[in-house]
Length: 149
View 1 (cartoon, rainbow, N blue to C red):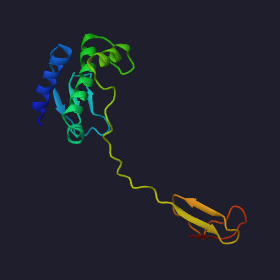
View 2 (tube, rainbow, N blue to C red):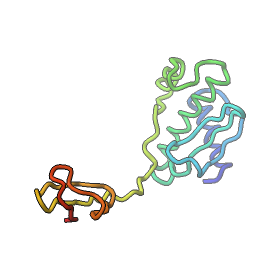
View 3 (cartoon, rainbow, N blue to C red):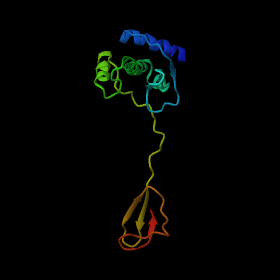
View 4 (cartoon, one colour):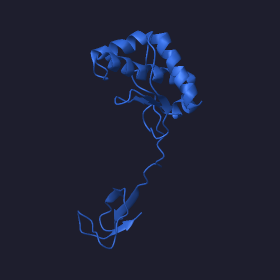
């Protein structure tokens, strides 16, 4: 989907659900990471995360567009456009718009690997996230030497 097709979809959605025209710019923004879209207060444009279409499809995209159009129309009319405002919550409910986008960020972190150490004298075990210099540290209970298990 191109930016022009996105703009036409937003214009159509605006007329269908809000009965008002969308008169500003709309574009995809690949730099968005955790949000589905955003409404820009300064120039009244709407930016949409392209991952919404790739991961969840057109239905979720229309939901994100309706959410951003709620911000847009309320801001243009001078009403409460923020998430916490009653006007915003009411308009979300009237248009059946989602309050939040489904999660987009995929955690690329591998699970944390723990290292296990044991005191050679008393047998107390230590679980650590980071590597420990066994030559430098001693057991906190008996002052014995520590070895990696």
